[in-house]
Image (cartoon, rainbow, N blue to C red; front, side, top):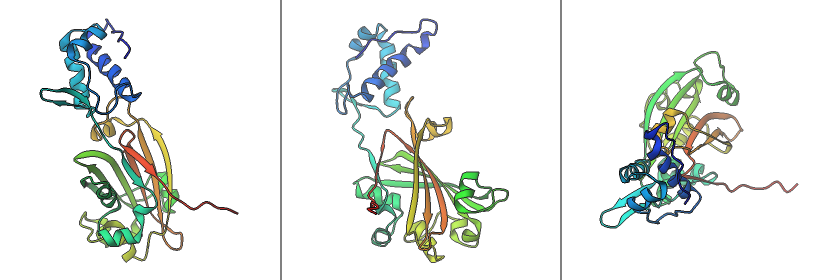
Length: 263
């Protein structure tokens, strides 16, 4: 682990610099999941800081969820298994009928973890241009219902999803007014309206989080997010919903299986 060069113009940043060095060591594998961090005395000596500064740096890591303290043993790099997103399986009708829950809940349960999700807002809205284009709705009027959900595994925030549904599909239904969607959740209610999810398009990019995303997802400094722009299409390839998922890149993996065009 390299030594920290402290910025003497801003003494209060010394602990942040030590924390950044430790994060870098965790990120490049020098400190692997399950490894014990050096003692406060060792950190202070290595980085040329006071012990209380080293202690504060470790506190910052713990607050970010990167390390955990075990009484009498020390501080250890947290073992955090990635939550895999099953791109093809997660939307299958069989999975929906077998489990009766949303794709996210089924996915998390299949990985022996505890899911939770909260609908934080639902409103009729003007869609972003990218969403309007994919849904074929007007960008100049409140042509969609916007649903915002936050998703958790084992009590930790994993992602936020902004779902956009054409108003003509959602109006007069539970899709436009409630989180109580019943057995099969969102896609069962689409199927009730004649829109059985049969095809999906998913565009995956990465970027740094907004301040609101960083706070809500409890992201450590420097951790990016994955953005999956998902479009659901029915049996006639009609788009009927778009969801933008913003996911923690440090906790998320993508697993896609798909046929390859051999022609």
